[in-house]
Amino acid sequence: AFLRDLGSMNDEIVAHTRGRCAAIWGNVRAVFGSHEAILGRVPPLGLRGEDGRTRKYNAAFVAADGSLVGNGVFSGSTPKSLLPNYREFDDARHFYSLPKLAQELGVAPADLVAPFELSIGGEQRKVGVLLCEDLWDDDYAFKPVDVLKAKGADVIVNLSASPFGIGKQAKRDRVLAARTRGCECFYVNATGAQDNGKNVFLFDGASPVYVDGRKVAQGASFREDSVSLVSGLVADPPEIAKVHAAIVAGLKATLERIGGRKVVVGLSGGIDSGVVASLCAEAIGSDNVIGVTMPSRFNSATTRSLAAELAKRLGIRFLVAPIEEAVDVTRQQIEGLTGAPVEGLVDENIQARDRGSRVLAGLAAQIGAIDRCGVVFTNNGNKTELAQGYCTLYGDVGGAVAPIADLYKTQVYDLARHINATRGQPIPAGMLAVKPSAELSAAQNPEQGGGDPFQFEYHDRLLYQMVELRRDPEEILADFAAGRLAKTLGLATEETVVGTFFPDAAAFVADLELVWRRFKGSFFKRVQAPPIVAVSKRAFGFDLREAQIGARFTRGYALLKEEVLAAARDG
Image (tube, rainbow, N blue to C red; front, side):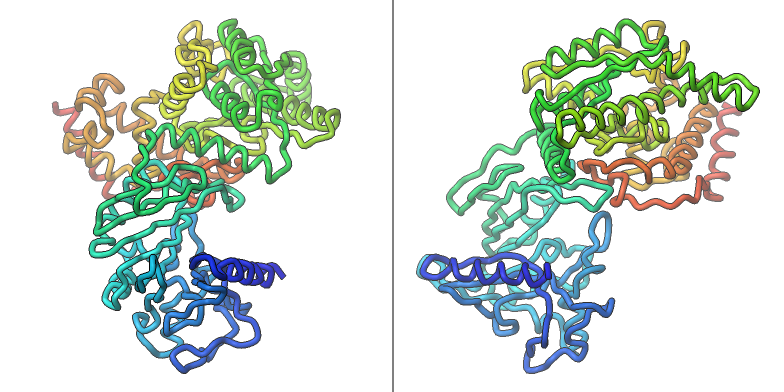
């Protein structure tokens, strides 16, 4: 029924072109009843896709003067050629590609690619119409752009649903500059949000126009805009501004979709909760955000006061829910059942679970019942913590959406500074200054130098190598052995690694192995995390698809480790 509904929308668009203009748009083309003949042949499998169900093409449609326009091969549409099957993309799972259709018909894929002839400004032009990946053909044997140019296309229209990612616009510009020489290209990118259950992806628009490999115009980011050959270039926002806009848009879209009119945010007094509360207030309004601080005897006066100050600056409702009494009840019950004292990580995790599963979940439900609207609570975790499993299941691994879980801790600080610079300093300066700490034990008191077990300037860069760049310990240790790790990580000198961050090579190696084991051993937590707003090159969730196989080290790593440690001892 939904496929037929989508098809009826084509009829509406076609009708609007009558006496007005030509239109090019993307839609699903489902094959019902019979498959059209193509080059005089009917596909033998006709109605079925490879899953035995209704065949579907990801297709571009062209209409003018109230009718669909053909290109000599297809009557009114053309299927997508290159179906990405990596990261978040699953095109090949759902759609039948043009090369597969060509194989079925016994012809070359190039035989099925042709431009559409359209009247533009009173002049007949040959317009090549592509869908997203069809333009990003560097890693494919079939090159649709080259085929269209060879068949006389002097205008290329690419209908794209390209998700935002840090550095993505620069990559688009490089690809478009190379692929659009000798023609005009209108790269029409989507706006809005989509999700796959585990990730929320934002589409940033910023649609450019290229003429002979040179960008001559570009639309606005994160909103619909009209762009033409003469509309000119707009200033490309700084990358951190795009991240900010993407997360706000992702939050807003997610809450709308799940019916979350209000949110409860746990306020620890640290930078993560400060940024999340600020983003929520921006996305849905301060009146719809409830901040709650949940102190125990381990929370410092500094972070307690910072939580209150943040709420005041944001103008959000502020609640205080001490947890010590409830946690004591749980401690006593567990000790009574086991006959052993509750201490260490067990005690710390009881506190985290009390905050998440009891207070935040209970408050969200109660406020929703009172206000008769949907109320959810947020996940305030960052990517550093999630990558290392430094979080508690059913405690801080909870909530309806994780706004900053695709930002490493240092990036969270960058975003906080940007928010303060552009939105009137809503985040107290003390939140940027206080040492990050879970404050779950006396040893973690930030007023006495305690805090989280990370050197964020180093570990964030290391994790970026492992997560985004898919590098393993052998490759990283090889950089260290060759004296180029600082350059790889973007640090000042090699002495920064051994000297500033670690006392010797043995400590560096031990930390490298610990980080890798934590990363590979904590997927069971990540798979239970809420949907993450994706902004990086590789987000946890259904972008980075993991398996619970634990940490492994290559044989090459073991040999190299022996060499590195022996050289350090001899030196």
